[in-house]
Image 1 (tube, rainbow, N blue to C red):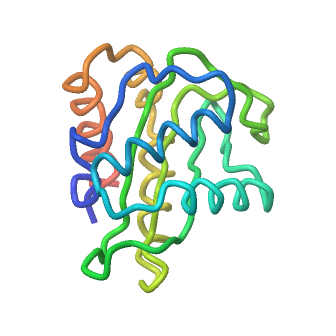
Image 2 (cartoon, rainbow, N blue to C red; image 1 turned 60 degrees about the horizontal axis):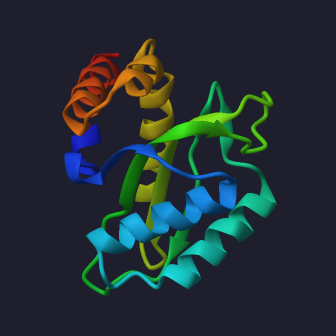
Length: 159
């Protein structure tokens, strides 16, 4: 599976402004709803907060991967992915105590199988690829971020 199978330049947001983990999640849910209007923003936000209570999704090195399963439209079989770089790093209670400035959010249909686990694993490998985080942090446009993602995605696919 390639990264471009589940995320596109339309799903990237550069320098998202937020002051807290909750605000990041709220803004990213709004962004997801702007891409897929059938999303119940309140339900998805609450599910993401519940997931954070189970265990923080900050994976270290300034990266978080919040995710949940939720009600999506009956014809929606693929997970919805949004990637954002933050205007300033915020506390995400990550395992390494580093503030987070790159967030990959995944919303998976609650009726689906385990495909979202494959996407989570791919996102984790992608964001752990040498140089990708620095390139995303340097990106000032969606095109620059997309290029960094495709280059890292090719490296992951070749490995």
